Figure 1 (cartoon, rainbow, N blue to C red):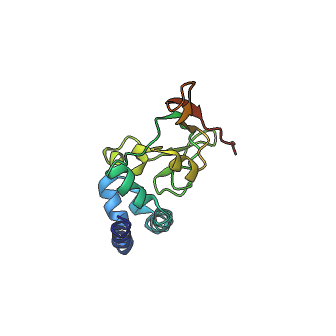
Figure 2 (cartoon, rainbow, N blue to C red):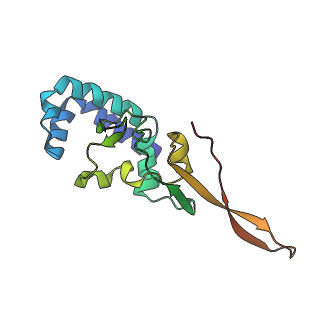
Figure 3 (cartoon, rainbow, N blue to C red):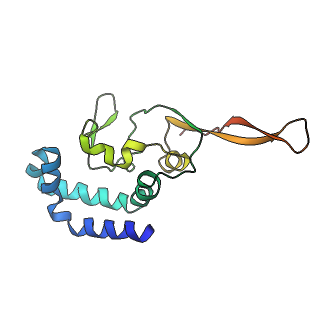
Length: 161
């Protein structure tokens, strides 16, 4: 899967000069074409962040639906933008009160991205130092009868940045 993700990334990287036109057709946002040079710069930054692991994550964990996920993830989005490729996502927009928001949140195409599944597991939360979500793990603990185990919930405590 790792080599397949590298192949996908390489092909997309080669298509960088035409990506603004493709994105314009997908999202019908004329700013992408009108600001072509800025769009190219932002796409290159986006692709560099994608090369750090999110493509492999999408193929293995989202597309193939990894089975080893925690029992429960709790919390909610704080609109910090960390999970948006460390605030480098092409579609990330500034909102009021120093918050960030997804420029394609309501789009049909968003459901086919990593974003639609975030956070899937603890690695997602740790990778982006997410302040809004935490993982509740199930860990085995012994009970009074020898040889028997019972599962109890233990929340992971994380330091907030």
